Amino acid sequence: MFSGELFFNAIVSGLLIGGFYAAVALGLSITFGCLEIVNIAHPTFVIFGSYVTYILNVNFGLDPILAGLVFVPAFFVLGMFLYRFYYASFERAGQESLNGLAFFFGLMFTVEVLLILVYGVDYRLVSAPYIGQTWHLGYIDFPLRQTVPFVVGTAMTIGVYLFLSKTFLGRAIKAVSQDRLALQLMGADPIRVKQYAMGIAIATAAVAGSLLIILGPVEPSQGRLYIGRVFAMVVLGGMGSVSGTLIAALLIGVIESFVATFYGPSWAPAVSFGLLFITLALRPQGMFGRA
Image 1 (tube, rainbow, N blue to C red):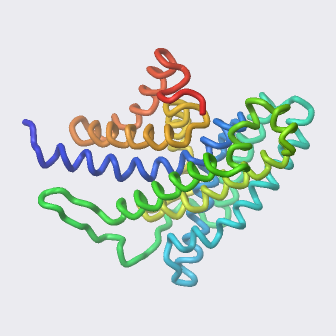
Image 2: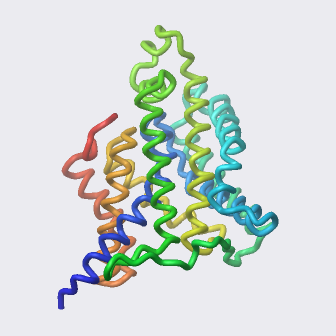
Image 3: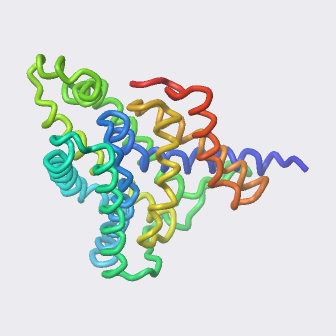
């Protein structure tokens, strides 16, 4: 039987989780969409960000969002160093396709194992005044543990979109994989541009990690659950299109919410892969094409 209450709550819940999905996929939209670097380890950096948030929250009582923001500069530097290593080891030698993918695959498991060695496989969680509270608008619920990640994730995605669209460095990042020679003629160093882009991509993982641990407890291998989702969002939205990634994330969030509400949660993970297959078959360039 159709229920208006379930219907509208499913929409709201899907939009809220979609804003978080956008934050997780944002870094991959830059590395995979703009730099053509298949950083399959990106969700693992999100989990790393969750554990950093957990440490600061438990030991110093820092708000999870603030904890994620505090470590943005450190993650930015980590991303720059990561690209330098990737470039020197693979890209400069023209071996980035297979060897580069293997590198990120190995990096994913290395970070995961290190987290297991230090913290074990137990779930970790944080505390904050808004976690556990819910706003009500009529019969529609807005759980704050979902609303806060939606607001922060959407704001970060829009901020990165404006940066890429309105600044010289942002436009250089979008152009670096499309016309490297033209970029050099404009006085920009493509290697340095890619280094900054990777730094920004990994920096977004610090914030996305803080949002993830607000939504619920985390454990080291949880990043694997998001690999398919984030690639589906990037491809569905259009390679390098941050705005497309945001819309794709909201769309996947709403469809997953409907499937989980009316057909069962076990079917929800199939949504991302189903949409990915349909997109690749009917519109390989994504909803908005390449940025």
